[in-house]
Length: 184
Image (cartoon, rainbow, N blue to C red; front, side, top):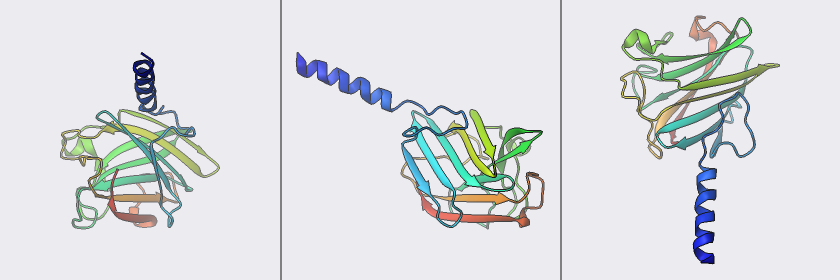
């Protein structure tokens, strides 16, 4: 009887630990299952996979917008990248779901390429040049404009930031990093 009770308690605790992070623009200790720090940029990425949903948090310093993206494989520069950009407009954080149509230049909203905004939830804080942006999306959206995320499968992680909040600013004036063989 005690073993059965202990087993039920352990199972209940396991379900509690698998809870989805709260997308509120703040990262609580232990909120995310995994963390990756990119040394060159100083960005920190936190994530958890809960069911069919990926929860991401990106922390970093920037005078302007920050962003991240995914490429399923090495292609012609950024062409085909699934990108997410975060900025502040009129004092409020904004999140964009973007797609890289051409090898260089600015990405476009997914909607312009037949997709849709796949961000399920978003919240961010931006204080003193420090960002904390959280969002969630399905692992597999079924859209050509989104990279399918398969836990354990390697992809290329893209990180970027700009000196201005204007997401339409020419992207040549940004800093970008590519992390090959990244896996969630």
